[in-house]
Image 1 (cartoon, helix red, strand yellow):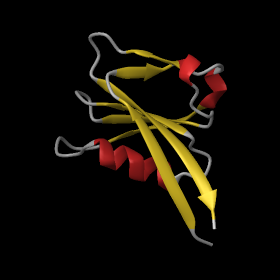
Image 2: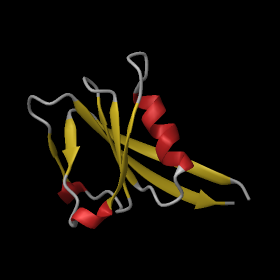
Image 3: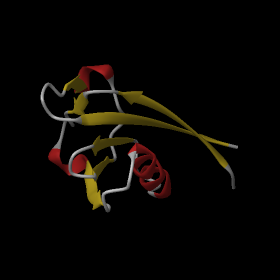
Image 4: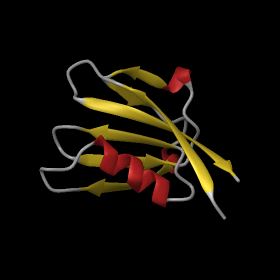
Length: 90
């Protein structure tokens, strides 16, 4: 089965899940990682619908909830980006 993965990235933003149970896990990488690593990590996790990539820590938080504009807020001084994932089965 093939799937088309579409992502929307909200720069300088944080995601506020509606429940603490939405967190699937946190992934960490070495210094040379990028937001692309977080996108691939979310893509590999079937339940992942939203991710936050923290630039300074090279941490990717994966969430099972769908990303909605109401849950995305400005990150202010934290360097982070929200990745909203849409999966289309083909």
